Length: 135
Image 1 (cartoon, rainbow, N blue to C red):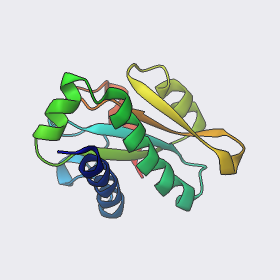
Image 2 (spheres, one colour):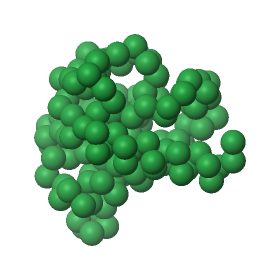
Image 3 (tube, helix red, strand yellow):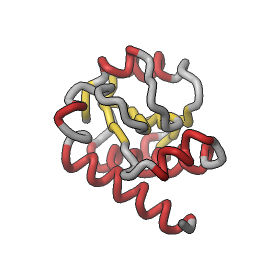
Image 4 (cartoon, rainbow, N blue to C red):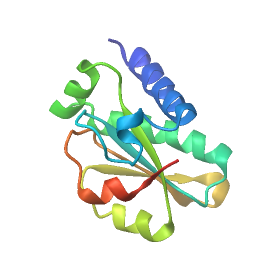
């Protein structure tokens, strides 16, 4: 699969997850299910239009940062590129920056404010991720 196809599929996956409000009934609270997935956290103070763009950029940034890992290879080969997009408050956002294997994105239209965090896809997530609410 070429990089263009991967990028398109990643962006399409974020858009579908966004429109459907998550990945399915088993994941009504962020963190459910036993499948390989990428978490994307968006500050709840970010305007919706910028939040959608930030989620897409975060997905791509995380893919590019972690593309050579075994987890990303498994994520790509295991079917849909599952993503869970959650809205978090400022305190939760700062706390989440303490978790490993992440990329933080800023938004120039908001004066360089940190708006999103995307994490390397994995199957096992810290308990904190189950408490984040779906966007």
